[in-house]
Image (tube, rainbow over all chains, first blue to last red):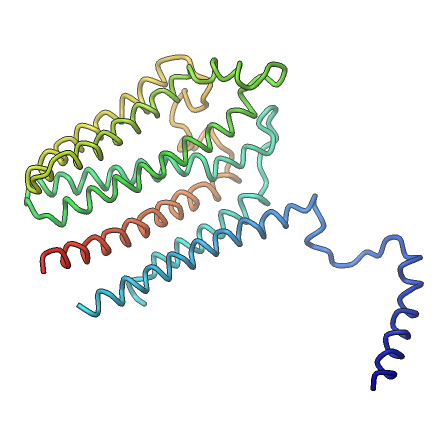
Length: 70
Length: 231
């Protein structure tokens, strides 16, 4: 089992080796790296917004629960 | 779920603001460059503050007409959120000004003395301080009825003072702040371009609804606290 795993790893690394050496630029669908990476900024501020909104929703639920207990 | 629709609307509008605000087309202006996108954030803070203070004064007047404590509570908490938005507007404005108004050739602290003299900044500071005094005044009165009545009257005064402080005086005096001629951000003919308007108006609504949401939570919490205090 261990040998097989090692063999697979060896094959994989050998196979990827030429990929690293050549292919200086492979155009893929790289949304997050285009337009000066502005999309990264959008992802960050959306993450902050999501966090704040989730916090508000949790607070809302907790207060609703307290109101129902009364 | 029915009564939560405006919260969902607020989330959607804010997400739209953040995405379209950074990606949407904006006019290419010298000096401002990409910072023109701050319109969706900095200016919205002041718009929301104004709306929240208006709600606060409406509740203050309703309190004076009915003397029901729930209106006093709402008035106090809407003013609190208004101050929060005002402070955010002030600090975002400070950042924005230090990269657009300040002369890059002289140190920031030196150009600060010219920026700080801008009437719009002084007016906004006066307005915020008047509302800060509202909070101090409230907390200094121990009698509940007296506190509610005096602070409701003061709230009306503070709201009236907003107009000369941030709307009238800065426009009479020479100011670096834009929007001195006519109706800033609302003038359809020759102000912000239409590509910005389709982001700006939803942004104002989204931010204001977020402020209302926060205030609603505070009001409900305060109500529970008061109930616990009574029993």
